[in-house]
Amino acid sequence: MIEKIVVNTGVGRLSQQAQFEDKILPEIEKEFATITGQKASRRQAKKSIAGFKTRTGQIVGLTVTLRGTRMENFFERLVNLVLPRVKDFRGLSETNVDQNGNLNIGLKEQNVFPEIDVEKSKVAFGIQVTIVPKKKERESAIDFYRRYGVPLKK
Image (cartoon, rainbow, N blue to C red; front, side):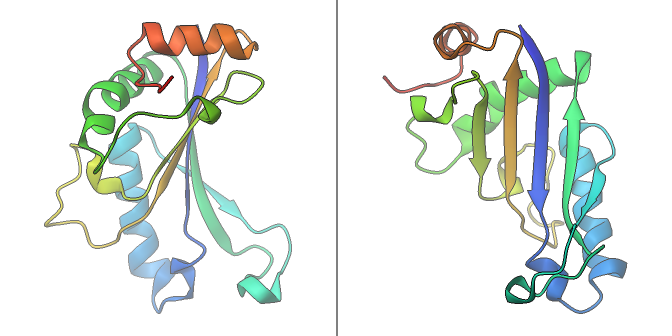
């Protein structure tokens, strides 16, 4: 029923720090790979924006597209382990599901994943998860998410 899961993180703000390419980015990539189970692809800025202090070609994010067994394992861990560990979590709003049935979840820190050791983690970054269903209807997707244990509020 799920076509794919896309996991993203933005590193634009961190890229302003000294030794970003040498120390910070490899650490983020390592933790991101630990969370998702596969290596992330780097996303570069398409054009320079002075207000955001970005230049063309500068790395601004990492993304992973999960399919098959890795996708199923990630979905199961997300629903059963990660979401219950989020501080003050009372369920996801139905507005997180868009018209195409995609469920978008934003996590403020990667520390909610059980694979990450908080003492060893040097960098904090947010993660955005998009779950893309095969059926592109919102109502059937909401029913599917409820059946598979995604805590959606009424």
